[in-house]
Length: 174
Length: 416
Image (tube, rainbow over all chains, first blue to last red; front, side):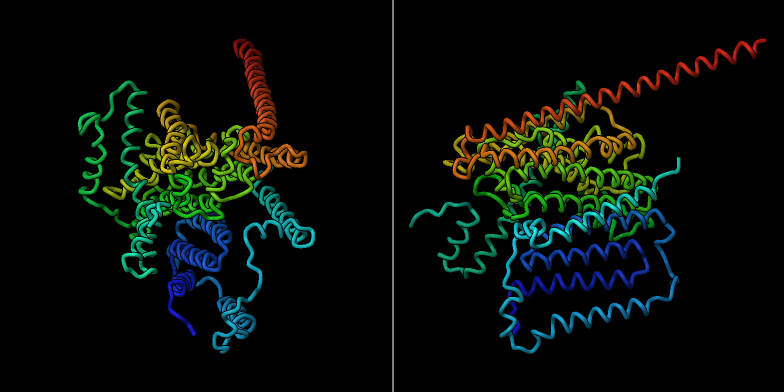
């Protein structure tokens, strides 16, 4: 079953960071603290990527989510200084988000955990996929005509459209 | 028993195992020693950097600089560090204690973590990650977070204002920096720091990618908060900036991280564009690589220091306009141009083959073509800048003439 080696310990530390951070985001009343917890959670996710031998995703997680998106969130929160000490709840949609969260959790349970549950580690020893992809494989897959070049280009187009939209909204009428 | 002198870390592990230590423990101890060395090296070096910076700034301003404590004032910063440590540690009322205390640690952490992937010599490197350059950029972006945390948690208007404009600038200048980094990555064909240095054995990238080197250097100046982009600590406008409420060693950590960041940025410049540890006799005496690396870093670093003492600070709007209207477009076009030319050169068979990649002559055709393309682009950009400047001056002049004419028409009628 589960053996206690260095990798398992590190996995538990990062899982704790991810889950604890996520819990802090939804329970904290101080929006800045919430953003900091979000960063801790994202950092835990980056650590899990390293454990899965996907260092590129770990670095991109830190660069994009912590270095750019979290900074943007903190920026927005700080510009509205009176929002840092909230006491009341502004909407009644908590049950909807709880439902979505439960659904996602159930989906993961059925799709990922059930197939390997209770097999006594016989199945868990073999990797889920035979492919051990490197960063080079990822790069090639994104520009290969037989693989993901179309989704990649569509995503680029979407991002460009979003950027132009942002510029149009932010632009002053003259 | 042959000497396994690969480097001190690996030698220690094998020696400990031979002495009867558990292999796992020996490996852990040797890695821990490596981490300690890589972490302590910059922390000790920073004392010398601060001394050097003060001396050079003093010379530029016709002063002598620190000269009382120790020979040439070398121990001045040790004395300063002792003073900072024994000063009273004040936390402002209304500060967010946890974030306030964590900010200086994160600030210096984001700089020191970079040293883990710097190749000091052919065999001395903390960790040769396959994604070395992305790691460097990712770790560097965490430093921005530290400034934001310090500015907000201090509960001070000036600190918050300083943090705001600095973070806006830092996030913006990351864009041209990453775009400029793409060019050496394309030429080297790898993201690992060691791989980039090895790809420069034949030809340094500053020859084949001078525009990328210049853009990288300028955006590094902004990222590290150096003149003319030193708005991060504008004492004449914001009292001090994001670190105004910090005292004692916490303030010292911010200062140390700033001085260290400047050196680290130039170290990266030397690794990525100036060939890193490569130099004569490195293959025979690997430790010599460290000397070459430091010598190469000294050139852009000293230039940065003299620049800091010489030129005035730009305004924040000028800084942002310079980034978005000049650096980013230049870096973007440069990436496209180099990608296109590199592909053409490779198809024509002019680029060095893997066998003779370290040969200087084999690298000449590709480097020469890229250099000429870069020079042509540089001339075009300078020309466009000159025309734009002339057009703006003409428009200014025309506006001034119009107002003078209007005044002439108004004044006589009023006199009548």
